[in-house]
Length: 212
Image (cartoon, rainbow, N blue to C red; front, top):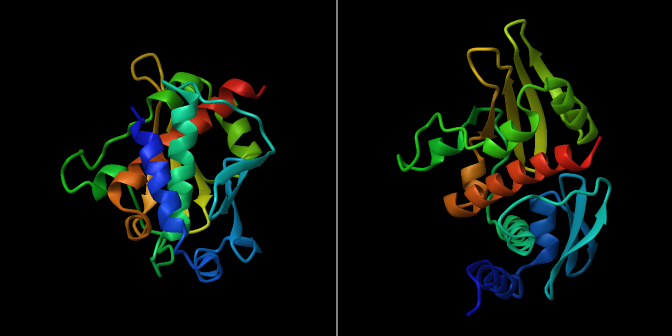
């Protein structure tokens, strides 16, 4: 039986057959390599998208996520990168951020965090998180004496995110929260946006496990 993530990937590849790579890459701010080939970056990896395949071509930082299956992770990531190129959105970021749950129409709480892998790797060690944030090109926007740190990151060219690190203590554990620009839901439908979120937190956790 063909796994669901392979079916999704094959569906994305079918949609890419009709994609105008030149128009889409320009609108979505991707680097066009040739008529039907573009390049897209994700967490210090570079992927190429063509009408035949979506492939990993370079890694500035080598990392492997600890998920239920690496193959499934890669298929999910490649599919969501393909959906980014396929997006018909004309929107640009508005610098107004919210949690993933804000987009769910009440299915998830608006203050959801869903960042267990990040807390597992970076909990109680802000220095480690700061090191990885700097390595991946994040920008520190806010630092408070109370132990709250806000970092900004361009996850995809039109998908900026904020990562809020709440430093724990003897009473409360470390928490990390991911916020998305509110235009993200115009670029992705909720389901692929949730997949992007999962790929991001597991990938960022993997970098912390593989580097240093």
